[in-house]
Amino acid sequence: LLLLCYAEEAAVIVSGLKNTDVFVGESATFTCQLSYPGVKNVQWWLDGSPLHNNFVTEISEQDGMIHTLTLNDVACHDSGTVTFRAGSLISSAKLLVKGISLLE
Image (cartoon, rainbow, N blue to C red; front, side, top):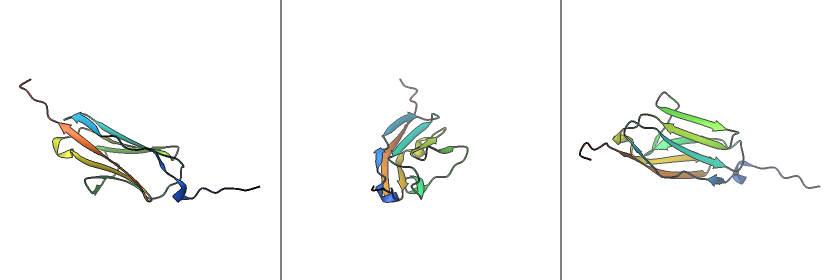
């Protein structure tokens, strides 16, 4: 009988972040799914700055495998690259916040 133990290195990204376009004042949600729970050192970044759970930034985790970031009430300056890091795993996507034109 052979027993396999899944180490952090065995986890892979099953579903990575996707580029997202939203309008000013809306919410932008990014989701990354891992193959196994328990990966340590999970962190979200926006243009190289670490993000933390607060009233504007919601960070959640489901079953230890589905990691979600929601940025609420976004502004144009929030446009940039969102990055998810879990151990040595990395997934990135672009966030584009569009202004509302009154000319249309």
